[in-house]
Each structure stands twice: as structure tokens, then as C-alpha cells.
Amino acid sequence: MDVKSPYLHPEYETLSREEICKLQTERLRETMQRCMKVPFYAQKFKEAGVTPDDIKSPDDVRRLPFTTKQDLRDTYPFGLAAVPLSECVRLHSSSGTTGNPTVILHTQRDLDEWANQVARNLWMVGLRPDDVFQNSSGYGMFTGGLGFQYGAERLGMLTVPAAAGNSLRQIKFMKDFGTTAVHAVPSYLTRLYEVMQEQGVDPRKDTKLRVFAIGAEPHSEEQRQRIEKMFGVKAYNSFGMSEMCGPGVGFECQEQNGLHFWEDYYIVEIVDPETLEPVPDGEIGELVLTSLRREAMPLIRYRTRDLTRVLGRTCPCGRNHVRLDRMKGRSDDMMVLRGVNIFPIQIEKILMQFTELASNYLITLTTDNDNDNMTVEVEIADMFTDDYKRLQELTKSVTRALKDEILLTPIVKLVPKGTLPVSEGKAVRVVDKRKVYQ
Ligand code: AMP
Ligand code: ZN
Image 1 (cartoon, rainbow, N blue to C red):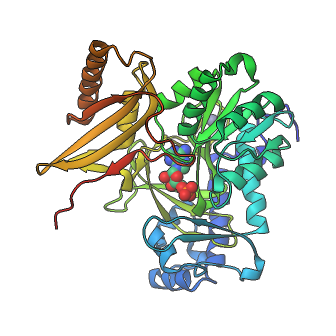
Image 2: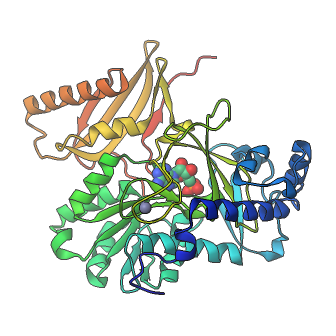
Image 3: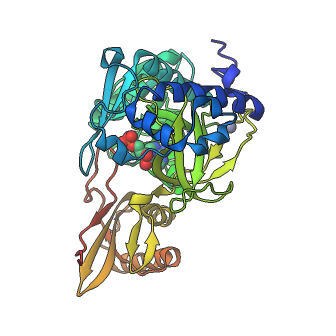
């Protein structure tokens, strides 16, 4: 490890586009070989009439079938394993809000490479072995716990598995252990800041914090900037998903100009979710990922349901790995209200522009007198809850700003700080109580 190098894996991080394509071609062939041991894929490759030898460039991935979450459910629990279970050493499972949960298997090599990926990201944002890393995310089945734990250890940092919640203890650890970096979901960090304020702790003076890794849930640029201003700490967007290993799939570099998705590990496609055809760079579509190194459960053209776009394929940081925009949301998060498509992140973006508002909010959809309505409850930052006139004016301005963004007039309710529910894991931003007409 050369602590002065900006790269942890220069041999992969600084590949040219040509070299990336060559490596991806080789690795896609190897991945297909591994997939041939899975009856599900063997059958699909046969139907498509494609063998590993037909792969001449990464674009040939388009000749292969897609894989969906439903396929993972249908083959639950071990139907997509490409190695005998005796070679697997870890299983993660997503809760699965509908139907069967999904299972992801890992060999020891999968875990080692996952740790390398996470370490690479943390190194990229300037962390080094003398940093102290506090992982304030849930442990257990949620991959943000163990994923960051092993990655931070691999980098050589003193790593504190604080897990989520218990804010007073989190703050004490940060102060006592000299924590310099924290990983957490963004909604939890804004809550943590409020607790710091209540406790009279000034993160700038009383802690050594300098880097945050925030991710696992959609958040707006405005939310990120707010977090950075609150703490005086740089916050880097971290993208991951259990199906691809967990955290480490994509991460922002110090330029903060989008997420570098690691093309030595994945083939990245952005497709139109309706036609499944590729969309041009710059246009929003569904992210589709093919894993290139996973042994236990390689996935071909996995439809993530996450919506994003390509921002570029070069970067001043010297990494040519494709840069993707922050996720706009998942196609399943999209609310359709009176025929208008709305993403929660659009609401968040507007709310975060009002300094009078705190960071916690909740969107509730209801049917009243056969009309669908949206209520946006948001906590107020300032202590002027009894200044009725000011509250009324603020409510009006927020309503107007939201209307300009979503083209519908929501019911805005300003509520005192601490009244809306806070989750320790991914935030629940939308409650849909609408009547379903059959
Ligand atoms: P899971 O594998 O259950 O932890 O969930 C993975 C999903 O979390 C992804 O498909 C995204 O929808 C979401 N996600 C993870 N990281 C981010 C991020 N940085 N920004 C937006 N959404 C994210
Ligand atoms: Zn970069």
C-alpha cells in the first residue's frame, strides 16, 4: 500500500476505455462459463443461441437474457447457485416486502473481492489506515453492515462496528475514539445532528469527523449539501445492492461529479424500462448490471429498477470507470397521482431548499371524496411553532414551490421537530393509503 497514491488498485482504477473493454470481454466469457452450471441460465443461453465464444465485446452482453428480482424469488433459496453450497461461506437475504425473500450467496473469494471494492472506494475519498471508521449502519442481513466492516478493515482503518441507532452512544464513540469517518444512511445522519444539537455537541469543534459515506437509500443533492453544511464534513454517495454483493458497486470520487461504477466488476447498461433497448448517454433509464467476478451467484443483466443516467466516461480523478448520476429513485417508488408521475426525491429536493425546515418528512397519499391527495408533513427546524403567521406564510411558500416542481398542489403540514417517525435503516418516505378501485 502506497499511502501517497490516490489509487488503491491503480492497475484497475486507471484502465483506458480500450483496456476496460478487453477485460470485460474476458470476464463476461468467464462469467458465462460459471453460469452454465445453473440450469436457469444454461436453458436461457440455449434459447438465445449464445455461447461464451460468441462474446467478442462487452456490447455482446445484449445478446443475453435479463434477470429480474422475480427470477430470484422463483428460484428461492438456492436455485441460482453456480457452485455447490459447500463452497459458499455466507448468505445474505433481502427482507422481500412481497412474496419470497431473495437470497444471495458468497464464496470466500466473493467476500474478499467485495472487501477490496469497498476498500477501494474508501481510499478514493481520501481515507487511509490512520483513519478511524465508525460504521453506523445496520448489521445482519443488511449488507451495509458487514460490507463496510470488512472493506474498512481491508483498508487498514481502526473500524468501529457501532451499528445503527442509539445516537447518544454514537456521539460518545465519535468523541472518545476520534472517529474521522462514518458510514450511515443519510436520513439517520440528519437525525444524529439534531441529537448533537440537543446535547450541545458541535461536530466541528468536538469531533474529528471529515468523511461520510452516505447511501443505501435515494437522497437529493440538496440533502447531501445540507449534511455537509451541518457537520462541516464531506459526504460521498455510496451505491450498492445485495444482488451485486452489497455496498461498493458505485461510489463518488473526490470530484463529487457522479458515482464511478466499477467496470472491472460489472457491465453497466442503462435501458428504457419499457422497450429494454439501451438509451443514449445522458438520458434516464433503468440501471442493468452484469456481475463479472462473482462466483457463488453471478447475475446476468440484472434489472435493478433503479433509474439513473450516464454522466460521462472520463473524470479529472484519472478513473475512466463510467460515472452515473445519483439515483432518481426506483421505478417502483414512483407515485402516480391524478395521472402525474412523481418521485419522492423531487419533494425532498424542494423541502431541503427551505432552511426553516428540518430534514425529516413524510408523504401520505389518500383518497378523499374520490379524489387522490398528497399530504406532505415536514418537521420545522426553528423554534417558532407558536408564531402562527410565520407558519402560515411558510406553509404557503412550501406549497407553491412543491406545486412548481410536481405540478399538483399537495397539502403541506408543518410539524414540530421529532414528531415524525425515524427509522434506523432505510427511511420510509411514502405511505400510500389510497383506495384501490378494481
Ligand atoms: P438492498 O440490496 O436491499 O440493500 O437495496 C439496494 C437498493 O438500495 C438499490 O437497488 C437502490 O434502490 C437503493 N440504493 C442503494 N444505494 C443507493 C444510493 N446511493 N442512492 C440511491 N439508492 C440507493
Ligand atoms: Zn472521478
